[in-house]
Length: 318
Length: 300
Image (cartoon, rainbow over all chains, first blue to last red; front, side):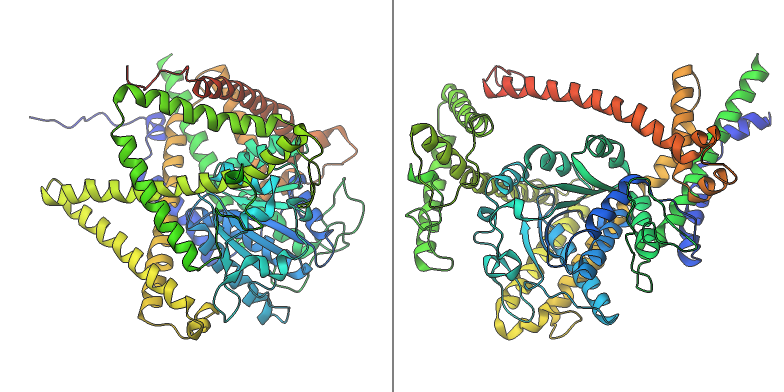
């Protein structure tokens, strides 16, 4: 017959054995409540995000960039925020773009929906509404990332052959007829190859694309690995995770080296790089950063609690 | 060699999109492909290894030469080679795009292979009414529904009369568009996001139970991780920096500066070292596979 252990747990044991459901409930509350009660937290953008923003803002109107959109909704908390911030900047600057993907068959549709959403948002706010085929073109999905990425570097137009995209209110047309691809002969005709990725396609691009400057938008867990490429100069800018999105949104709101109550200073850039004050700059970064903030707080607290419990137990046992 | 020549201008190896010539060529290629598969399946066992070795070696050799051989710079389509060396350089550069297309086609076969494998396993499970066979029914019905709604929606959008469907909103949508939207955006995408978000709970639980300062190494790791995590918290960083004079020595101990130092002087060199080791290992493995020296997993 089973008996209950009458010995009550010591304080140290209690600290080391907080029930999982309690931890999960606290995490759920800390992550969910800021979504309903938004708070504005102070932020100091990191160098990698500042570089990313500054390079984009220095592009002249009418420039073209190539976007590798290798994410789906499994990482939308980070990747969708990155994509939205990127699109807002590109659309406000009048930069045209070409989107392709090598990571996931779902990715082109997810990118298409996100672009349409931001284009509608900009149009409603009184700005220019980007039109498919005229201002951006989506090449679709390529199952073999290695070969396709080599072809992008070697002969960009070869990956466009036979591909079609939907112009607005029209059946699909050959992408080579799109105004976006006029004047493009090589990947070097793009100002940047910007990769929004949640998978290992980042290294494939780093290894194979040598003719266009690269900038990456990656998930939080990919930041350490990609920081090595940013530090070496292979990446001109790096936006990582929710913090990176929040950095971009902060820069879009306050600008860089712009006088104001929340002046963002940079040691690297002496020029004033304006933001887009008065526009819809707050996106998923502003929405999700408080959740990340409080979740990190809980993680730190949990680790400290467990360790304090362990030390108290050791002391008692010694 | 015309097979691997640049396909624009048009050659025997391609045809205009949507033309009957293209369809005839696709059908011929399909039957040749089926014949090839049947032939490969009937090859004697002792011949399979040399075939695999030859295909692997030739494929590897192509990319080896592509990367190692001097590539033409700013080559225009009308440029002609001046000698054999340049001719080879032009050929390999032009061929790579076609090889990339071939690899895309081969990779696409994996989707068909995946569907075949999925159907074989789960239909068998349903037929034998094995444990949890109901989940197999859900899986197959979901897959077929997604394929059906996806393709019907796609073909409807090809019709110029339905062009308004491509715009924003639900203009001109029918049952098929709403069905596709429900399945893709309403269910699949949200389940995708939901599954991934669960990871946060496991990370918290694992960190709480396993992240303990049991040794010097673990303590260093723990403290470093805490500093980096704290640096990601804007509120902590803000208050930590209050009152610090940027010209004073204490400026070095501002959270963002400590985190930057850790990233630049500890994390980055460590990852570079690991990546370098992994890279050398991959190179060695690649050479072994290319030259058929790797025996692991092959039939003895």
